[in-house]
Image (tube, rainbow, N blue to C red; front, side):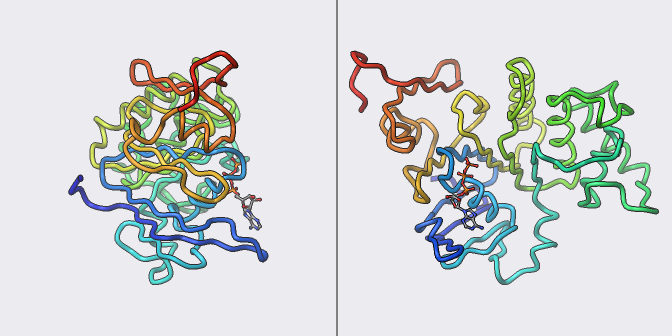
Length: 270
Ligand SMILES: Nc1ncnc2c1ncn2[C@@H]1O[C@H](COP(=O)(O)OP(=O)(O)OP(=O)(O)O)[C@@H](O)[C@H]1O
């Protein structure tokens, strides 16, 4: 059992909305340096769980502790500033440059606030992150001209500029072609070296979209945990088939995962 600092802890979390129980007692502990995949079929409860991780919602019962603070006892706004949140549906409409988009991670806003000016050190830091994410040379390019993949990497730089201890990635490969997806995954893998203490939670429906550096998986279905723990133990043909309600064969090759429907005549699903 790791002794690294606990970054995120969900204990028996139940969530009800409009008379409906959406989560039925979810528990999970994420420690510094761990990279979790949050996986499950449509409607499983992934976004709801990510909402707790990002200090966006309170549980109905049970406890959520994010970065040592219990939700319900702390000011959520202050806590959110310590969490890097990458949402591929970032609602930016104005033609900010890559550098300006990254700097909005410091103000926690979508656009640059009027009269806000970055310091020279903040600008230098934005440029360092832009280079780290493979966008050097595109610092002055404007948001509407960027590809989806470039936007995804710019949003990771934006999430990192506040030096978060927890990074949340909400389906970061959405809308990417295979090359852009692979570049994005390589970039995420790089973070284990550039930001060694950082913990992350990445939401996806697809095992193929898991970075090689993923250490743990939380598999959910119907608002309950199917399995949670080190990825090699958590992601199995049996657990993934149970979660998705379909016989699926899970394989791992060179650190990458894949899932295929188990065809008739194939080996029995464990
Ligand atoms: N505010 C709400 N009021 C009522 N029901 C809700 C609310 N938010 C979510 N739900 C329901 O809770 C369930 C889980 O939703 P959630 O969005 O967390 O699933 P998900 O795993 O992220 O799904 P997807 O993969 O489709 O994005 C769904 O059945 C959804 O309809």
